[in-house]
Structure formats: C-alpha cells, structure tokens
Length: 284
Image 1 (cartoon, helix red, strand yellow):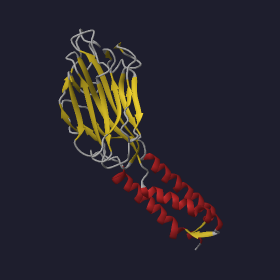
Image 2 (spheres, rainbow, N blue to C red; image 1 turned 90 degrees about the horizontal axis):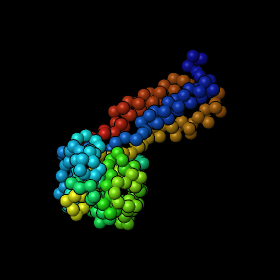
Image 3 (tube, rainbow, N blue to C red; image 1 turned 180 degrees about the horizontal axis):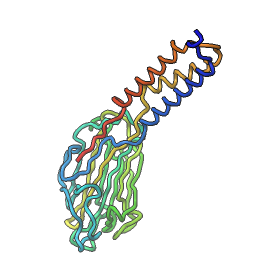
Image 4 (cartoon, rainbow, N blue to C red; image 1 turned 120 degrees about the vertical axis):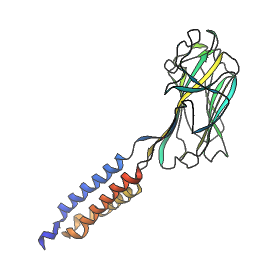
C-alpha cells in the first residue's frame, strides 16, 4: 500500500507543477494575431468596392511626393482621384473570441502631375464601424488634408489613432499646413478597442475633388489577442481551490487523483492544438 501513497507535501508540489504548466499553456496561446487582413493587391475578397482604382508602381518625378510607391504591402494600393470611393465589408468579421481588437491601415496623399497640389480640408478618408452587420454605422475616425498637403507612406510619421466609442462623433486628424508633411502626415490610421462581436463590419470612404489629388490606402488589418481557453481557466480555478486543502491532509492515494489530473492536462493540450489556435484569414 505504501507505494500507492504520496505524502501531501510531495503531492502538493506535483500539483503546483501541473498548475504552472496549465498557466504556461494558457499564456502560450495568447498573443496578437491577425483576424483578417487585405493587401488590396489588385483584388479583394474582404470588401465590396465602389469607384476608385488599384494603383501600382510609384509616383512620377513631377508628382509630390516624387518617386514614392503607391503600395506599402505587396504590389498595389487602392485609391481615388477626383471622386468618392468606398470599401465596405462584404461579410461579417468575427472578433468574438478576442480582446484588444485593433484596426489599422496605411494611407498616403499625393499631388499628381503637379508639384503644387495635394489634399485640402474638404478631402478626407473616413473609417466607419458597424457592430451589427451594417445596420448601424459609427463614424469613428477621419483624416483630412490642408491646403495641398501630401505625404508618402514612408515619410509621413503621423498615426491617426483613436479608440472605438460607439457614437457618431468623428475624431478628425488634419495636417497643420500644406506641402510636404512629416510628423502630421498621417500615414497610419488606427482604431483600438473594437467590440468583440460576430457581426463586425468596416466601411472606408475616400474623397477628393481634383484630377491632381490622390488618396491611396493599403495593408488593412484587424488584429486581436486570443482569449485563454475555457478548459484551462476551469482547471486553474479548480487547482487553486483544492491546493490549500491538500496541505491539511496527511496522505492521499496517488493512483486515484494524480493520474486523472495529468490525463486532463494531456487532453487540454490536445484540445489547444486542435481547436484553440485561430485560423489567420489572409486576404489578397
């Protein structure tokens, strides 16, 4: 009978090791992952498009900024010249199993065929969020121009960043002046704290009103942190509950409890690998 008995202290140590392994497994499946993305490389499966065009290559030497790429990821970006263009989610985006959900995209502004044009205060790029399949849209962030402003993806360092707040008041970002913009050349748009929902949708609108003005966007992403698996949460809470009581016991049967716990741990590891890791949806 002695070989089947484990002292409470040794058993307590074994449970602590198991608890650490469970916590480590939970942490290993957490981390920033891409939920959906779209490089807008001459096609899209994520958006329904209205007006606008795909642009590849770089601006000309007579443009501003000169010799700057129209794409920051892949071969193409999506832009508009002298029109209003929209990109609207064509299906729901499921963010329900994530936290710290963030949208990001890149933005460049050009003067085309001229060294003295660019985007003005009436030109804008707006991002709207719908948490309910497009039934309600919330104007969340907007970047506008100012007196013929322009910037490239690589030279504009501004980030038009705001949290999602679920109201219709738009947070607006604008350069302080015209011409080549650096610190207030908003080449990145970021929306943090997006809702965890199975029915998220996004609508992007670009507008300008002259043949020498061009907005171009690229590298659309929604990222999040995966939640700790439910099974691991249950096991950790269970162990935290029973561990103090174990120290009060003199002996316990090793074969009746410890093997069962380790079996559950093995099942949890298999479940994590098969079911927990989310598939990263990469759009062309």
